[in-house]
Structures are given as C-alpha cells and as structure tokens.
Amino acid sequence: MALIEAQNLRKSYGSIQAVRGISFQVDRGEVVGFLGPNGAGKSTTMKLLTGHLLPDSGSAKVGGFDVTESPVAAKAHLGYSPEGAPAYGEMTVREFLQFAAELRGLPKPSVKVQNTLSLCRLTEVAQQTIETLSKGYRMRVGFAQAVIHDPEVLILDEPTDGLDPNQKFEVRRLLKEMAARKAVIVSTHILEEIEELCTRVIIIAQGEVRCDESKEKFLQRGSDLNQIFRQLTA
Amino acid sequence: MTMSSSTTSISARKTIGAVFRREFAGYFRTPLAYVFLAVFNAFAISLAFFVGYIYEAGVANLDRFFLYHPWLWAFLAPAAGARLWAEEHRQGTIELLLTWPVTVWQTALGKFLAGWAFLACALLITTPIAFTIGYLGDPDVGVIISGYIGSLLCAGACLGIATIASALTRSQVIAFVVGFLACFILVIVGYGVFDELLAGILSPSAIEEVRRLGLWRNLEPFTLGLIDLRPCAYFLTLSFAGLGLSTLIIERR
Image 1 (cartoon, rainbow over the protein chains, first blue to last red):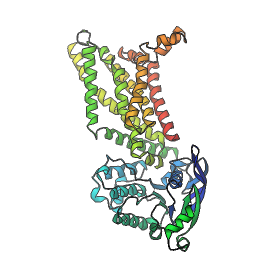
Image 2: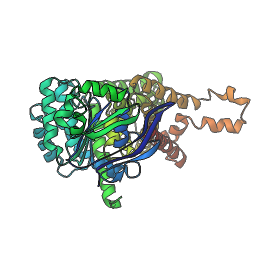
Image 3: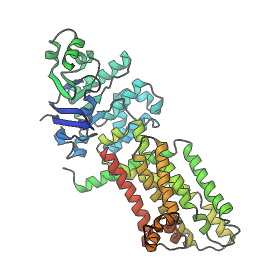
Image 4: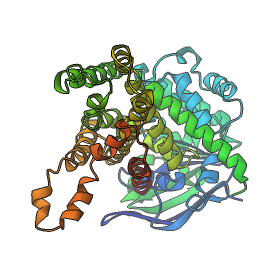
C-alpha cells in the first residue's frame, strides 16, 4: 500500500486553476523531491495532501486514510511542516513541542518532547522563546513538531529555505536519518538537493505533473540540472 | 474511523484542555492582560460610583454597578477575543492546527473557554465592590450572585460575537473593531435607538421584540435576582452561535 496517494487532485482559487489533475503515489522508503517554479502548485498540492485545503475534485490519502473523509485518522499518520515553519513565537521551544504532543494525544508527551529535542539538536534552546531564535533553529522547530510522533508520512514545504549551508546540511542530515522508514515529500528550489537527498523527482508546472521519475533516471537527462528544469517547466 | 467513541471523547477533552491552557496562559504572557484587568476594574467601579451614583443612591444593591456591564463587555470582550483566531492567521499557525489530528470545533471550544475564563477573572477582581456594599448595608447576597452570573453570561455572548470577527481576519485591530461594532449594536438596540427607524416597518409589539434583543434587557432580570430561562437562552445562544460560526468560518477557508 502506498503511504501517500494523490488521485487526480484539482483545486482552483476563483478563476485560477492552481492544481489541474495531479496524481502520484509515494511508498515507504521514498524521498520525493517536489520541484517547480513559484506558483506552479507545489504548496497547494501539499496543502491538499495535508488536509489544510479541500480539493475541488479528486482525492488524497495518507496512510491509507482519505484526507477528506477521515481527516483525523489521516492527520495522525502525517507530519507536516508548512512553508516558513510557522510556530507560536511567544512560546518556548519546549512548551511548543509539548503543546504539539498534547494536541496529537501522544502518550507520555514530555518523554516525546525530550527525545525530539535531542533528535533535532534543540536541547540547548529548549527554554528560549521561538521568536528569539535564528532562522536555522526556527526551521528545526518546525521540523521537530512534524516528527514528534514519528509519523509514517512526512511532508516538508521548503525546509531548507533561507538557511546557511551549515544549517541546510543539518536539516538534510536529520531527514536522511529517518527517511528509510517513511514516505517523504520535500519541496525545494535547490536542484542540488535532489542529488543529496531524494530517491525520486516530481516536477510540477502550471498545476500539472511534468516529470515523475527516479533520481537516477532524472540525472541521466543531462549534467546541467538548471537547464533540464527550465525545459521541463517551460 | 477505528477509534471508539469513548477514546474519542477522552482525546477531545484532552485537546480542548491543551488549547484552553495555551490560550489562557497566552493572555498573561504579555503585560497587556494586566492593563486589561486594571482598565476593566477601573471602569467597572468608577462608572458605578461617578456615573451611577451607587453610593449616593443609598440602596444596598449592585443595580447601578451591573447597569454598565453591557457597555464594558461590548468594549472589552472583543479586546480579549480579537487575538483568538486572528493571531493564528497572522503567525501562520492556523496551518498547524488544521493539519494536526484535531477537529476545529475542539480548538474553537478551547479558545472560547479560555477567553471566557479570562473575562471571568476580570469580573472576579471587581468583587470588593460587593463586599463594600455588604459592609455599608445589608444587601441580598442571592441577588448579587445572580447579577454576577448574568454579567458572566453577557460576557460570554459578547465573546462569542468577538470570535466570529476574529475568525474573519488576520488583523487583531480589525477583529476588535468589527466585534465591538456588533456588540455595540446589541447594546443600543435595548435602549430603543432604532424605534423611529423601525416604526414605519414594524408593529409596536414587533419593535418591543427587537428591543428585547438588547444586552441590558437580558441582563436586567439577573440584577433583580431573577434567573429566567429566556435571558439565559439569549446569552447562551449568542455564545454558541459565535462558537459555531467561527468554527464554520475556519473550516471553510
């Protein structure tokens, strides 16, 4: 069974068709790089998969549960970090993760918080309020709330956006550590990240899937990733 | 859904509790909460003394204290309720709430109860006026308690309206202004302000019904020691309508 299933998803905002019939499946152990120009429908697709938006037609399944029909069960299998890793700025990192754990109804929430803090290398800033953290730490907090329940499905919207090379390295390392046991979708603008992180590439442009293939196959298309990207999204 | 209804209700209670604790503590994270409590207390007491002449009236009851509560709640309930959803939109955390395995109504209820509890705190610190009246005269304690119950219900109704305004926008300022205007209309309706306007359209008995929609008309019986079904239903309806509508607004976004 595929852990993530998108079936002919469609979504319009007024007269603008943001997503026009997107279908794909992601299995355990796969890390899918989600690529596309800005406004291509990447974030909208992720929002449809996570239940933040409801599709006009088509269906999204997470862990076998339909996101529209059994949203709570589907969301229990899902970890999601939205673009910009939003969090409650006035809370400390520990309080925020505790809140996330409680809302997810996890048993022994404080133990989960402690483990997640050390997994994401956040222990030293646990008592700091989130608004005082650097961007790198904030992204890791967003990552931490997404993995606190060790979900089977992980969806991350630009988790390395705006980070310095060291911070990027750190987020990628975290992701690689846990990717084997999960189905992961990562959206990114950094083409090099495909090589480093992903097992598969999906390129979206104008609300449609333009390319869906394994990393190896994708890299055989040529040596200049930027040019391949331009061709596929034109 | 594989979960049994009993585990669902336990997890619902836990969720509502977690949201409640976060929101309630959230009020006291900023100095604004203390300013709010001080302003409420100052206005509640000074309106009673300097506008209502509660002391000069020489009667040992709190009528003239509760008389101004619809005005106070119309102003301060939207101030306390403005952040409840608007802040989620501004910080982007609404996206977390909508993708965590909780339902919107659980979150909405937790938020509403936190706001209500905060308003109850504001009301609680006015109780010295009750003790003062008790010291100066021999008031009917039951009447004072029912007045406080009425005021608390009135606060809940205004907060319900405020949460709708808050769900509609990412700006706390807009949420406050819209919430205040809506509550303000409910305050002045009771004073017959629209009577002339409505005279051509409605019969006199219908105009009286409109007047009954005012906040004070429904609070008044409580200040006389009467806990009637109709005013209770009025306040609770507004509270639940606010809760339900804000839930719908958040779900449909």
